[in-house]
Image 1 (cartoon, one colour):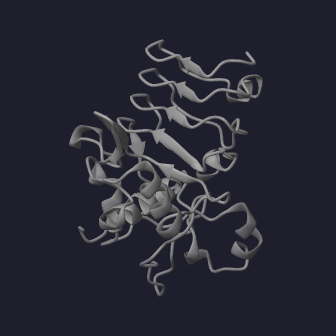
Image 2 (tube, helix red, strand yellow):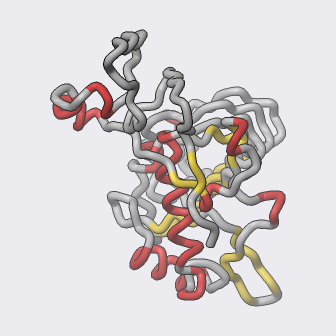
Length: 240
């Protein structure tokens, strides 16, 4: 498919997508996978340099690894990603999206949204760029009105919200603050930390009568439940 620029696979009940196949579409500009039944994405994708738009909204995706977009090298330094209306699990793995949405919201008056694509790109690159290749990832609408094109926030029904856990269901991602997962690079250091610095993946030992249970647990969250008297594993930040 050397001359393919648009691939529209929306509304096809797809459950998976072979991301490695993109290497066979070196000229693709827009990939539409919205309104399917896709439940996960790869941890890393080597995206073609020509790809500028990826539509993943209205699927069954619960999380998007931060490394998913690390293979981006778009020629225009801008990448439009639509991921709203997915049942997002708000745990530490999605912290990068929450942090990014919060930064864009805080700098909305400076042009990170409600602005031309060029101004939005510059604002994100200057204020909110967490991408290793300096790509401005835009999660908002690209709206065309007459001859004007502007980046607009989605409607309330299309805003990025938590679907789980239950205590955060319906909360905007920009309004939550979550711990960051321990990365693989930190694994060696994590072995030297106290057991109260992370959640154990094995069954925790019961504290002795003289020992009080820990009151704060951070870092790793996967597959573990902790019962503490007055502590929630997730908490809301102050509203903007």
